[in-house]
Length: 499
Image 1: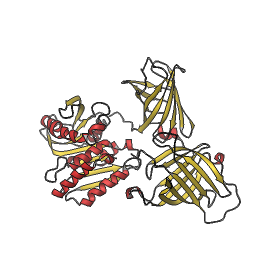
Image 2: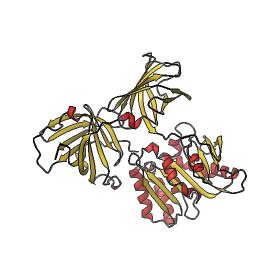
Image 3: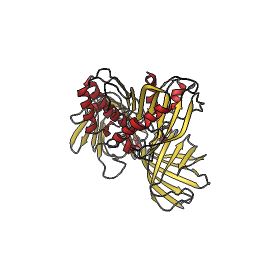
């Protein structure tokens, strides 16, 4: 995911070709309130950005209220942020707007964006956008624009079916009910605008009849009662679509907390009865990594009564991929699914990326998978699937593959964090290629411009340039957030898992 917005001064110039009548155009913060500028991008160029970031098409939308604007380029490069703005200069047919853009979740020491707008008509024209970093031009894009009444509705877009992850940084007191202290993490699952499931210190409770109010473009206030009927109020200040800062007032001011939050969307699952069976709450202790990993095994219908051997899908981040078994079951795939969790909290950051991924891949191939294959009837069609850092682990496993007898037949990798691959990993793949240009596997990729599309395109291009014999590589872009990519990616390539 793109974590850092380039320090920049952004000039947005809406250029005119025709004269227009002497009308008063919306050149004040009051008249811009509730308006949106939408740019249909036709061309983009840069002498400094990677080619994978340069693509035509898509939209950039800028929403305004009286104090802030919301820059939304998720269709193009994933960037989206809230910024304060000031109109510095205005004439009959133009205005200059200066903004400051959040970087790494802060509202101080910010880059400046300068937008110069010149109208062709009261509501349309052509636009050129220039981003400047420390006096140097970073990129230029151009296209037609339109100005229309369009209010930004944060609640409607981002609250329902969303999980918010809060981390407390400061606390005025300790809550005796939930032991909220600095560094405590808790989650809020929004099933509607009034129903929230809270998860705090391994305890879960539902809060009904909550009030949720958008106070301005980037701020929400929600309130209700905890499981102990203690009143709470959470004020959320968004820095972009998915993250920001929060403060909590608990029990009418008795306890106060503040910190940061991020979020992801989820698809509510309808109650489904599996036709197959699920072996739950299993654990495997690795002598290589020294970690015990929980795992689950899904067995397709008829497994117990059959002598058949089955393909196996090995899924990383099993703590988040609970729904994959329903995808297999619902599509009647005779496939075993083994979902292995990360182990201790945060362990995936060690195991799924180099150098820790080297030991973790040894654990998979010499300990865990042989154990699974000794206890379940499997055949030689193995699929590995992972998302984000789990996709980076896939990159490590692919680099280790032999063209003579690949270990995994299929790799289903969702919006992978290929930026985590080290030069040593890339050099290993290069060395294997020099020894054997055959690689009969399927590398099945997806990405989003809100996440890792750029590095995924680079990864794809490197393998296409090799011209491996027998290799199938597919890369599809989805208009989703980074956190939403896992299940749609698996469904997209599900038919490969038994081939």
